[in-house]
Image 1 (cartoon, rainbow, N blue to C red):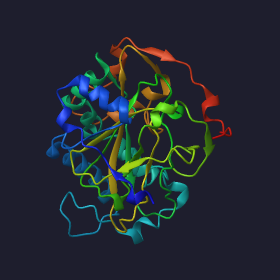
Image 2 (image 1 turned 60 degrees about the vertical axis):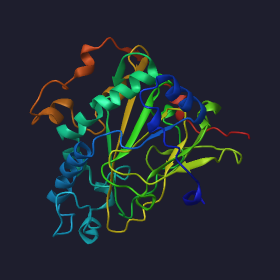
Image 3 (image 1 turned 120 degrees about the vertical axis):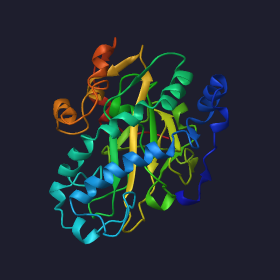
Image 4 (image 1 turned 30 degrees about the vertical axis):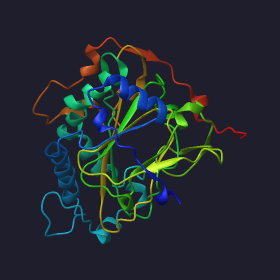
Amino acid sequence: MHEKCQPFLDSSALLGDAKALRARAQEDGYLFLRGLLPEPEVLQVRADELAVVEKYGWRQSGQDSLGGWINTAALYQVPEAEMRADIGVSTAAYHDVQKLESMHRLPHHPRLLELYRALFGGEVLVHPRHIARMITSHPCMTPTPPHQDFPLIQGTKNTWTAWFPLGACPRRLGALMVCRRSHRVGYIPVVTAKGAGGIAAQLCPYEQDWVAGDFAAGDVLTFPSLTVHRALPCRGGEQIRLSLDVRYQPLAEEVEFKSLLPHCTLSWDEIYADWQRDDLKYYWRRLPLKISPWDETLLQPKRRIC
């Protein structure tokens, strides 16, 4: 059913017109932007992440640095207890990916900062807690269920997620999809669910206006934290889906403290150990942040009546 939904509306023609961008985002609850990021810079992060996959023996031989074909027999030997089921590879491999300077630097690209300055009408805080999804066909994997980001990240509701693949990502590889206009509902009560985040939003039958599409390297999908979204099932077989989840918000608004922590058990010092430049190390500590409290009740299952 979801594979046959309506295509994304391309908003790249609105870049440079802040008023039009904000109006489109307010109407639909998302923006899809073709070619926002330069392809070579996106593919460099892809190559760096695939080098980690290669290190662990999970890539098929005979590929160039950008080939995403996986040795599934080798990958399936990784015990489920060692896997990051929300990511797609082992915890050890994910730690190596989190240490990549290129992965942390790409979210600060001027084209992304320009976009969010236009949407917010002011300075932007880039959350340092970047998530590198490396979706594979390992048996422990479950597609990300429909959910809002707000219960998981909290802070200001004006936090936006940028989702973009590191390379071409057709729907069959498990691209992201959005429930159009779902941001207008406000916070939606959750239920426990399998998949990244561990929760699902309880959508009513009439709240099923899904949009999706195929992505090329450089395309960006972005939406506010109340927009419901989900991942399509990954049917790539021996291919890996690499993507980044990055979050942005107005600097003047509140941020929850965990958004400033790594998306793994490493410390920032461990992540930074081999970086070549220092400019992005602990950059948020130089900013006048407002820290908000965590509300555990937002993650507690509660029945919604439609």
